[in-house]
Image 1 (cartoon, rainbow, N blue to C red):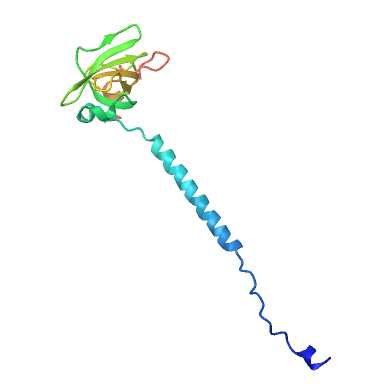
Image 2 (cartoon, helix red, strand yellow):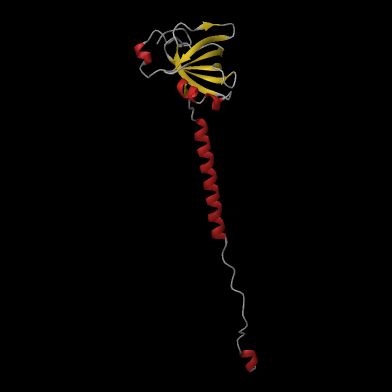
Length: 159
């Protein structure tokens, strides 16, 4: 072996490649976590069923237009009229009233002077006639105890 051969090669060499697998894994986990959070938040937000009161809708009637909403109000006394396709009635708030034309059979507990939520839309952009596809009766957890004969089971018995 000669002296030149025994000398170490001192030429620059490229540094070893960085282990990118760890950072790539962390990045993938962050993206997956964000995707899961986005899906959960959208699912939770879409499962919430908000309603607007008659007074709220009347305050910004033009902005509501004819889009589908859930409208809450008190069924006015002596306004319920059964029709061939459903029921017509008036829901009131403290500052106004809306005429509702509901299709289909109303719920069993539907009556005057009770709060209801109707699902549907206004028939015109500025009018006060509401076309409802569903009526939901609002009541407290103690309603059945206070009115045991009003609630009937599917077999016809009262609870």
